[in-house]
Amino acid sequence: MTRLIAGPFNRVEGDLEIRLDVKDGRVTAAYVNSPLYRGFEQILVGKAPADALVYVPRICGICSVSQSIAAATALANAQGRTPPENGAHLHNIILAAENVADHLTHFYLFFMPDFAREIYAGEPWAESAARFRAMGGDAQREFLPARAAFLRIMGLLAGHWPHTLGLQPGGTTRAIGRAEQTRLLGHIAGLRRFLEATFYSDALEAVAALDSADALDAWEANGSGGDFRAFLAFSRDAGLEALGSGPGLYLSFGAYSLNGGHAFALGVWQGGAVGPLREEDIAEDHARAWMVRAAEGPRPPSRGITLPDADATDAYSWCKAPRLAGRVAETGAFARQLVDGQPLVTGLAARSGSNARSRVIARAVEVARLILLLERWAAAIRPDEPFCLAAPMPDEARGSGMIEAARGSLGHWLDIRKGRIFNYQIIAPTTWNFSPRDGGGQPGACEAALVGAPVLPGETTPIAVQHIVRSFDPCMVCTVH
Image 1 (cartoon, rainbow, N blue to C red):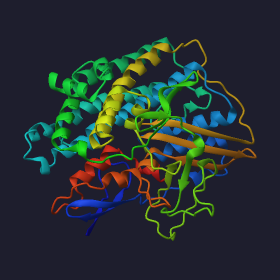
Image 2 (image 1 turned 90 degrees about the vertical axis):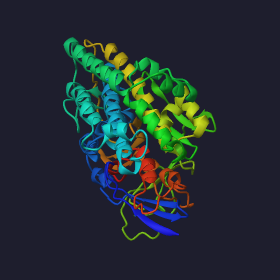
Image 3 (image 1 turned 45 degrees about the horizontal axis):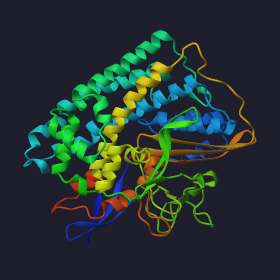
Image 4 (image 1 turned 180 degrees about the horizontal axis):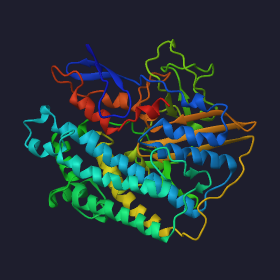
């Protein structure tokens, strides 16, 4: 057996290193190390509750809105209130705009450039893949102006991005009028044009309506053009469907809340069926993290502790190990669409489960669905009605904010005592997916997905490993908050 240290990885957000045990040209074990401790949870202790809205967006520069929404939701939960309908619409629009931007940024800047590498030079599609070459491909130059439209939505509705303060427990501080609503619809229309002309080469409705793995294959075969079709061809020939199998348990906290429901359902999927999500089943295991360990073992995040211990025995990561009723769960767009019952993703799960290919497909399907929702939410805004309702913060309260970020389930748990934050705990999507082993020896979702990945002679960071890692779209700075 040989041992490789893969990393630090490029084209992921934050610092990531993975130790690989390799035998007979295959990965036999993987150990994911998040090598940076940042301590946001400890920074928040003793602060005024509303200060969380200032600090938590700075956990990350690419998914800061998600952190803001989770914090605002936790504070609103502690207050026992919900935003007015306009405020909920703007929360959803701002969050969806960031999530779509993240999905497309992952596709064009993080994932697709791997197909333009020298290792694929002999493939029949190598010339086509040059369009996605890092720093020099035409695809990036075409995508970046379209991405700017998402930032214009942020500027219009949230003041600026990242680290907006416009997102509040009671809604949004930025009320818009009819003219701004028209501008918002215009920005969304521009995104539709880019997606239909360049990304899909088809109508959004046609992509959102794909209802099986066979329907996706027929859609690819019967159409032409579009960067998504290019991905389908490249990834099939590169064998990505056989790489990076998921754990079989998939989690969604429910996405885009409005009137007591969610646009994408909350729940847990396993074995072909969706079951209820029970918050009390969530616990954080510190057994392999450089953290102080509670005597009673894993604790629920509402009572969690985050105290660093650089000398902790058997530790190899600053990341905790979240578990759902003691089991490893995967989260992300694939899990979210699976829990919501999207038929194409359900069909992919039946055919081959989650893998490096199906995770990217799920993001592409979700983008189409989200643009349709953005159009509906923007049209539903009523400028003459309230956007934000103020309310006092209780001196003693607990609250949780469980939402869906681009990369999956994001939870904030808040404990207020004597008018100050007594405890604040966060579990980010990449904490779920890139966790280390737990006290029972169970590897995290990515660690398990890497087992069996091929390692070619001379590879130090194997291409198959890179495909698998990037298929999860890790955000390591959120992981080690």
